[in-house]
Amino acid sequence: MLNVKNRAGSEATSAPWSTLAVAELAAHPGNLRDIETPADLLADVTENGVKEPLYVVRTHGDVPQIVDGFQRFAAAVAAGLEAVPVTPRPVIRIDALTPHPANAREDLDINAAFVESLRAEGCRIPVKIQRLDGGVLQVNDGNRRFHGSKDAGLTHLPYEWDDDDRDAAGQFLDMITTAQHRKSLTPSEMNQAMFSAAEAGAQVGRIARAAGVRQKDVKTVVKVRSDEKLRAAVAGASSYAWTFEHMAALAEFADDAGALEAITEAAAEEDADASDVDWAIAIERTKRDKRTKAEAHRAELEAAGQKVRDAEELSERAVAVWRLRGISAEEHADCKGQVWVFDERQGDRYEPYCSAPGLYGHEAPVSASGGGTTKTAAEVEAERAARAAVKKGNLDWDAAEVLRRKWITDLIKRRNLPKNITNDLIGHVNNALLNGSWGICDDLNKEPTTEILAAFLGLNSEQGKNRGGFAGHVAKDPRRAPQLQFAALAAVREKCASRTAWRTDSQRSDWIRKPTGRWFMVLEALGYPLTPIEQSVVDDEPYDPAKKKPRAAITSGDGQGAEQGRGTAEGIGEQEAEEPANDDEAAA
Image (cartoon, rainbow, N blue to C red; front, side, top):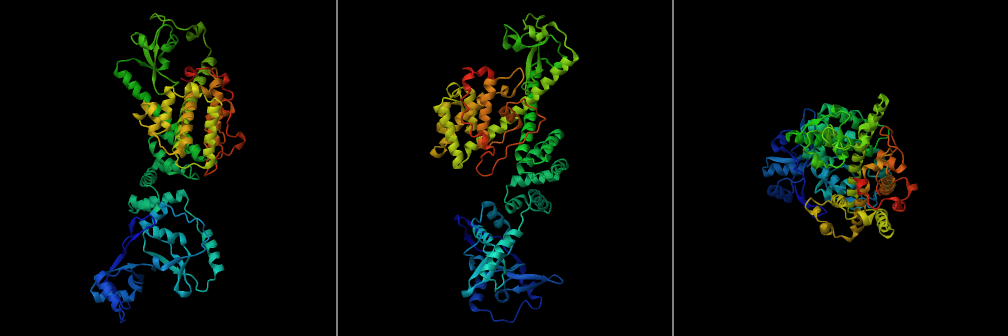
């Protein structure tokens, strides 16, 4: 086969043809004919071999029969060749073809994945060609395959003849009907086809090239389809178009039946979309991460000889050390009454308690012991339910924070933003600076803001130590200035969007909740799909994890939110006069 240059200038070599032994072909009547072989053809075959494949079909009894290429075969016999290249279907050289001058498709969408699939497996669907006056061979159907195959470095295409009497009107009608008759595989069908190819012996790399996906995506599909539990999870939401990322997330939780069930239930919901499944996955990942950190902390405490207790084991006198008066956590470390109890507020660590403050000489707030009153069973149950609700709310808030900050990071990293989104970012920056809103003066240079900003900018731990060097580590392209400036403002708002923003009980903090709600409206207008707990903050309603809220529809392409009635929330700072001058304690 010949080496050719594709449009990008890189060299590509098409896959070799299958071969058949000359002796096998010559053994069957009709293949070797008594014809005169042109001298130049014989000389070329003698020196270079047969380069153009013979079109050979298998007849009854599996007999190889030449359909096209009798002269080349005769030259091969005369030159003493042992084998010749063959193809089971008619092919034609690409350089002999001419694309249709008025193809109906304005955008052929010849992307890298399409080209790579052609390079890996060749063109499987014949192009339809017609011979015009002057001997021109015009491609009437298959112009995308024609151009894509050239970029892939192929030298030949399978073909079939169009009707010789097909007029120009008929050619355009064919473009309409053939386009209407084609239907792409659904994601589920594509996944099953890739898995079946793997079962049939295809290597991961070959499948990835043919399907135009990453090798790790193929491995994910094979893993999910091969595992009974994972396969059942996918089948449990068969109407959902599972993405590779979501299937990979299922594989993360292969040994966690509860997590698999939660993710599957989210995907099985009516009208479920990717953001709903993202939310379920984020919650399960947050649960797992907190559990892992808590287990590590407990192991560390036990290794140091500390006493670890369950909350149920403590008496009513026990008080968290941070609530004791006149003594710090460091000073209390030597107290014989110190025990460590799981911190349900954080969910990922244990906190020190004093098992009996009065016995060990510490002063506890009166409210810590309940003021000497005995609680009824109903009051105890109500407190238990309230603690469970706070625990669930904190978990969901932390999961939402992970999703939200990842979305912001991706927005900041994008190389090309639509003009309307860029203009919106500039508008938010101008509003924050000129109106003195968003808490810029108080919070821009604080340590938590710096840590968040470093993550938004993709800086490593070493680069993130020195705020003064941040500008030197980011792209100098002036077109990215709106994104980088917005990153600084976003870090400020995220620093201030503490857990208390979602609370509507005794811990309600309007000076945090209201600006956080306006910040979420900014992100929603930019295209971020709010999670249920974020939506409750925007709506200023109590958060109910069991309540299914409709997610805002997001239009594809420009990232704009569908709920335009809310605008772009430019007034995010207009009501912040009620905020305290320093909200570090509230944000902790």
